[in-house]
Length: 194
Image 1: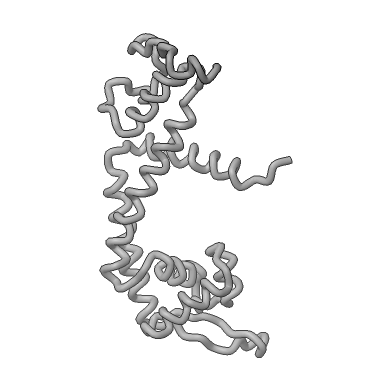
Image 2 (image 1 turned 90 degrees about the vertical axis):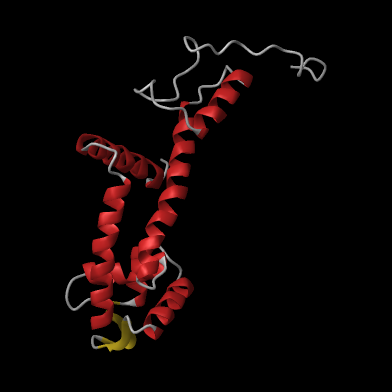
């Protein structure tokens, strides 16, 4: 389109009968902020299929809303999300609830420097302790203290209840479907292109 007529065209009609659906299988659902964005783009660019834009937009908004809602629980226990993740990784590793810093970094996909900062804060708070690795005296292990064990168990109980409540408007079948779709998408995004 030339510069002269770029702003002169009349966008194609986007009546309810011809506009692409942005509300999935529930066209009676109340419109949301993503609908407004997609509708505006449909008006301006009727040649584009905006289905993926709507999905990614909603995933982004869900992530923005779920993050702070989860942080509220961790804050009650004096933890940041990253610190909870470290304690949770140690707790679910099973007795004796000890891992090397490098193993923790790999599990949490965190740089060694980032892990060191978290470990320093947790050690100062009495949640973990560092001890020399009996199998390799050149390295050490990170172990949950009794306080750390009790804290992460209580936090995990409240975290589970909180997340369950946040997703309570979905039926068990919808949760299973959403989980399967999220798993499929994660696999696609984390599998190297061939």
